[in-house]
Image (cartoon, rainbow, N blue to C red; front, top):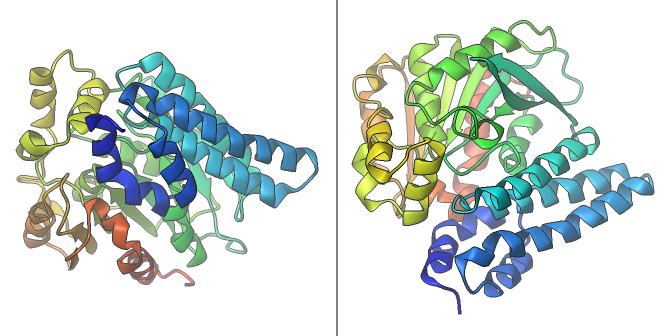
Length: 355
């Protein structure tokens, strides 16, 4: 029998696991084996190791495509082992290191392949992955901002529709996320990181510096519009289930989410975390967004109220597409077919991509 915390994790995030690369049977078997939250990370790491071993074996036998797929999947499993396991940071960091290693080792063997890039930022580095569609000399590029508990090791399934339509992607760990979460806390003015990344990408000659899109999921659904409001180089933006004002959402957030925010905002207690939460707001900012924006929300979202997306859609100054999915949960991952391809088609049209 799962404890209440494990049941909460399964309830809130189960569809996301499967939509983003966890085999359904693995999800059912692993979660059924977890009695208490303290077992979560270890159980998921054990199943991740099965996929990692298959990847290493495939690589040893020269089966590069199979190796890439197995290692990519292992990275996702290791990521979900650590994603909200903030009460045991050493265990979380060990799982995180395996997630990073597996995805890094998968990158040369994916189709298309990927390149790890590190961008200097405030005395630290922002780690990201650049993947470019095959056969494109200077494709448009879309930056991908992850959420509170997601990072670049989770996003392959999100990336695929855009790559298929001729759009390069750069997914990265910003302040409070992934590799950066240990050094730089969550910040409301996330646009500072995005500006540094665009500056770096515009020095490259293998992507089109004049065709830049921005995408964000969950908390990234706040970060992406926020960046679009302050950096006019962003030509189009996609926002998926982002909060309008994080402090407003605070009282009804799942306990695991509040604690993850406290840790990743480097706050000593929940009161300090709430003060940081007050800095994550689109109040007085949304009207600055003039580029086209596609906003998606699930009306059954129990993490971020879907009305936040409606408020953003109402306040932006530029063209807006707003899709509220009646039976969609948070990020509508239970109805991914209702928005993943549609948003990719939309971005391809905005950036003049081949697809």
